Image (cartoon, rainbow over all chains, first blue to last red):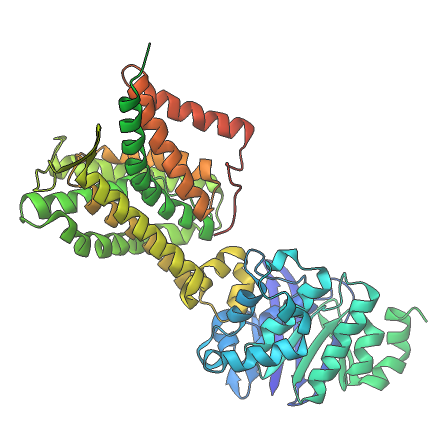
Length: 234
Length: 292
């Protein structure tokens, strides 16, 4: 469904990504792991059209994304759950969710999707009139995931969803990913939490200093000598 | 010194009426700041342009002053959108000093263009509304001021409703609060900026048509209203819509009551003293700053 082909990204003279290739097949959970600064967020923002690649191509359902801008990519059904819970702080929970259903296709089914999101996250229904900035960190993460679901996405890209959350909330976030996977959602999961994310993923890529150094079935990556040493401290 | 209660009552009424117009002139400036963090120092000059349009339609075209709304509002939207597209968009995200230079430069260009085309004459219209008054006891209400107040309140309410209740209005607020997240929702942030700048300018078209029956036009009329708008926006809390409306009334009252109890043009001193006090002791404004 998503096909990243030899994508390079530069920030001025600095090359953040070196010919990165990655595939996310429909209905699968693919994990992208790597240390802080490896280029994970850069890759995800490039797929989302927020950054322009200096080389390579990105195809989503056969369509070339490289020339599209961020809002056009979103309109195709490609949702990013950004790092650091980028809510609309001065809007209510309800308004944040409505913004998720902003694009033309999502708007038609907005009230129906809203019910589904409220069913998945009852806490959001309880707090729908509250300003988003008054929510706890975990609730804000749920809101950002719910807001992305309002887009009726075909592919969801999670950027460090467990970052900065209490252990119980981390568990809840991964449970949501498992639930979405069970419903057939296609997911690209970017995580520093290697063990947890490889447990839910089907396939994994390891990114180091802007290059893919390892890829394979999640279990194989998890058992790989290099991964164990580099990320799991074993 | 003693002040008659009638005089005070009269100045309070006048202050509220004018304050409503100040509020309308200021919400556009506040909206533009809230959405894209640009202070448009040519805001007053945009109003001046709108007042000339309204003036010529009334004085030369024989239009009803309030019918000029139909021209001034879209004309100012267009002016704002064009100036945004041509000059402001390229410097978004640049150091704020550059942005200040640019909009101050725009204000000087517009003032001087007006001087070239319309000379320095102070132009006033005399319409059927100009002399209409309502008397309530000892207090006199000038009908054009009352209409301006009601029109301003309606326009501000309409704009508030648009920002709060429509999808595009929500997208404007979303882009103000988190540009990247808004893009990820499918919002074309560049288009939203253009729209917000156009709307922020269009409010000045409304204000000009509401004022043309009782206020003069000249190339420098924008200086006064521009200054008032900055004071109101800072007092209300930068980007805070409702705060701006309340601050508009406060400044209207300060100007009007000040003029009644202080000699000469000392009321202006009062307004700016208030401004400096706010900057010193409550720089976030009376009601706190917000992102749209």
